Length: 276
Ligand code: NDP
Image 1 (cartoon, rainbow, N blue to C red):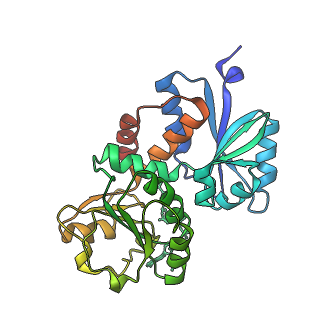
Image 2 (image 1 turned 180 degrees about the vertical axis):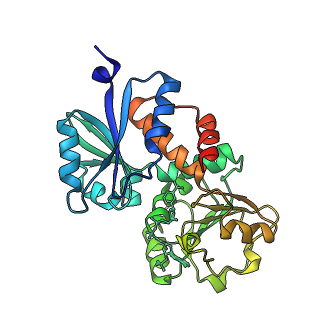
C-alpha cells in the first residue's frame, strides 16, 4: 500500500486557485509533524461550489480550506458552525465527518497569533483601530475581543458599514465603536489595515495623530515589498508588519482543527517569505 492510498485528503477550494500557496504550506506542516495527508488545489466553477464540495467528500475528502470568492457560500453550506465562524459570517475551514459538514473560521485567530506570538506585541488592554468593514475585518473582531483588547474602533470608507459592524458587536465585554476617519485624534497601540486599498496602492485617509512611537501598524496584505500603508506608517514612526504571518497562522490553525497537532510555523514563514 502506498502512502497516497492511506493518506487523508484535504484541499483548498477557490476560483481562481492556481496562485494558492496552501498546498505547499500544508505539505510542509504534514512533513514536519509526520501526518499522513494529501492537500490539493480544487478549482470550483463560480456557480458550482456546493457541488464541488460534495464531489470531494464523495472521493473521501476530510476537510477543505475555502478561499475567494466562496467564504460566504461555505458559511451557508455548513451544517454546524463554530462561534468564531458564526461571528465572522464566513467560513474558511470545512471539516467533513459522519456528523456532516462543519464550518470554522481561522483567519482572525491567525491574525491574533501573528501579532502576539510572532511580532511579540501583546493585545491585552491595548487600543485597536480596525480599518475596513469587509469580510476580513469582520472575521477578526471576535478573536480581538477574546484577546482582551481595551477597545476597538472601526473606520471604513463607507461609514455606514463600519457602524453596522460596531453595532453587531456592541454587546461584547470590550467597547466596540465606529468613527469617521477625520474624527480619529488619538494614537492607537495597534492599527490593522483590513481594507483592500493597498491592492490599488491607495491609502485610507488617516489623520497623522493615530500613529504613536509604540504603534504597531499591521497590513493584512503582503508582498515582496512593504505596502504603501506600511511605508506611510514607518514615515510616522510606527512599527510595521505585513499579513504573511497571518496567512501562515490561519493555515496552522486549520491544520490544528483537522489533525489536532500544532505545526511550527517559523520555518514555513521563512520559506514562504523567500518565495515572494
Ligand atoms: P472586501 O472586498 O470584503 O472589503 C474591502 C474593504 O476595503 C472594504 O471595507 C472597502 O471599503 C475597503 N476599501 C477598498 N478600497 C479602498 C480604498 N481605496 N480606500 C479605503 N478603503 C478601501 O475584502 P476582504 O475584507 O476580503 O479583504 C481585505 C484585504 O485583506 C485584502 O487585501 C485581502 O487580501 C486581505 N486578507 C488577507 C488575509 C491574510 O491571511 N493575510 C486574509 C484575508 C484577507 P468600502 O466598504 O467603502 O467598499
